[in-house]
Image 1: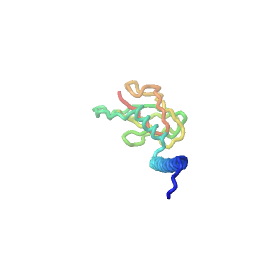
Image 2: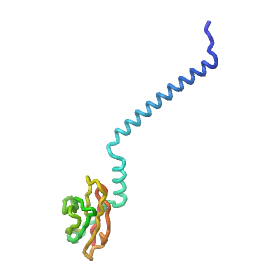
Image 3: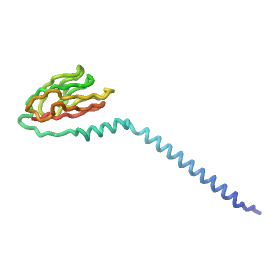
Image 4: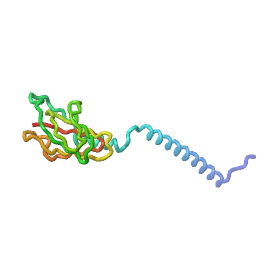
Length: 154
C-alpha cells in the first residue's frame, strides 16, 4: 500500500517547487541583464550628452547662396583656455589653446570640437563683424567633451 502524503507534506513540496522556479527565473533575468549591459558600448552619460547636443544645436543645412564664400572675422574666447578645435567644411581653421583667438570664417556652419577634453569649456563670441546676424555678440556655447555647431550668417 502506498502511503498518503499529509496535507502539510504536500504544501511543503509545493513551496519547494515554487522556490526552485523563482530561483531559475531570477538567474535567467540576471543573465539577460548582464548581457544587455555588456552589449551597450556607449557610456549612458555620453549618449545623453550627444542627444542633448543635437537638441540644443541641431546641424542646419543652409542653402548655398552667391555670397556663401564671403569671409568674416570672429574673435572667440575659450574659458578656461583649452585646445578646442574650430572646424569649417571638415578643415581645422583654428585652435583655442591660448584662450582668445581671431579667426576668419565663411558663411555657413563652424564646429567647435571639444572631444577628448575632460572639463566643461565655455566658448564666447567676443567680437564679430556688424553685418553678421549670427552668431550673436557675447553668445556662449558650452562644450562638454562634444562637438557644438555655430551658425555664421549675414
